[in-house]
Image (cartoon, rainbow, N blue to C red; front, top):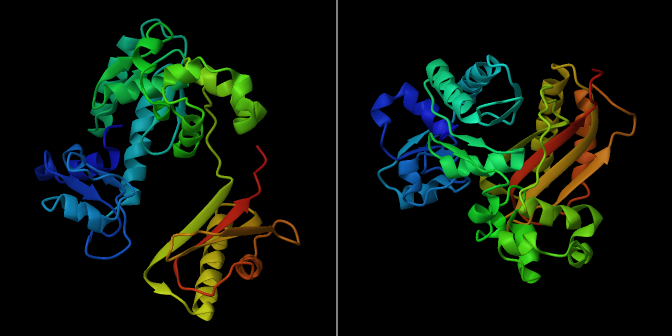
Length: 336
């Protein structure tokens, strides 16, 4: 989907079309420690990016319209889009609000792509970009070439001409950490990685990634479309404080309440908690995370989860103020 969150907001406020729009937090860039969830293409032209503090976005684009995030609206719009895709005789694998893989025995993928775009637009009022490939990896990157609202194809035939000169970070799944490791080995472009000897990568990346990275750089990828609904294996909640919190008692009280509420939410969905993890972030942005398995086995008791969270918190040094506090519960997978 094209600028999905912003696009949903613009549907509700057509007067904002063509203007720089930023969505995030409560929409107030004057409040500290709120970040951009999505920015319109017009705002991105000023350097506004997802994950950036709202205050920084306001400095880069003073004329932007700032709006609060509305998760319920995005859930509803996403469901409409995915239902439009499922109306076609294809397999659909949903990836979050704004992305899906579509696959099947497709004689004319360009014709299907045009039909999908029209169906999504008709059902939701939103535009989408479609990438076509022989596998998920190729299709994912092709969609980047096609944005916004286009159709683009990358296959094994044109992969090298399009990708060999690009940096390794252009590959789906190669993040900054992996890119830095490859750079240290002198592998900076996709073409260089494609020609690399897997044995030379083995000491750095291990037996699983070392052979896979060159294959991926040559355009290999998964072709299996998973149509079963995704089931969360964990649930988390975190809060960034407007001002740093230094009092260990206040931190413990807040954490216990967060853990209890999180447990009640997942139990309400019929899930059981198996592990608890706690995250804190200091002023320096150092972010320790500790976890434990529940000693009595899976539980639905919020007090057990809260007590476990406090035990985990005790493993973290609270000798300095923290700016963020988070808790995660791992969940027992339901019987299918």
